[in-house]
Amino acid sequence: MNDLRSRLRDSGYRLTPQRELILAAVESLGHATPDEVLAEVREHSSAVNASTVYRTLEVLEGLGLVRHAHLSDRAPTYHSVSDHEHFHLVCRNCGRVVSVGPGMLTSLTERLRDEQNFAVDVGHLTVFGACVECAEAAPEVTR
Image 1 (cartoon, helix red, strand yellow):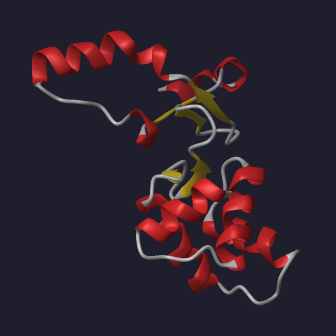
Image 2: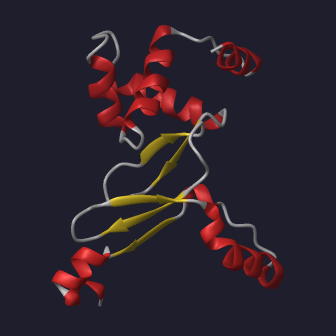
């Protein structure tokens, strides 16, 4: 928590109880939309509103403490960077989300770097498709 305090302070922010609750909610939920973070935080404090959650998530992301990805057509989903670096696989049929380590993409990211002079930000990557169970149950979902 001292590292968090110093990172916030160095950027001109304080570690308020609300910021601490919001970061703890993101860490405990794993992957969560701002509304899900708000619901989790409200279990501990009714003094936090939606705009505080959105602003705090922006601040925490700017400081590199959380990241977001778009796992659906809904609001972005936030996760803590204290977790491993990963990208997401999302089944369009059942909604299952799987976190996958960046090593799975090594050949692709190296090729993009070498051939396109492009560095991939794996943490924002989401691949949509169908999990094996859904693809086997209804092959048309993979088309």
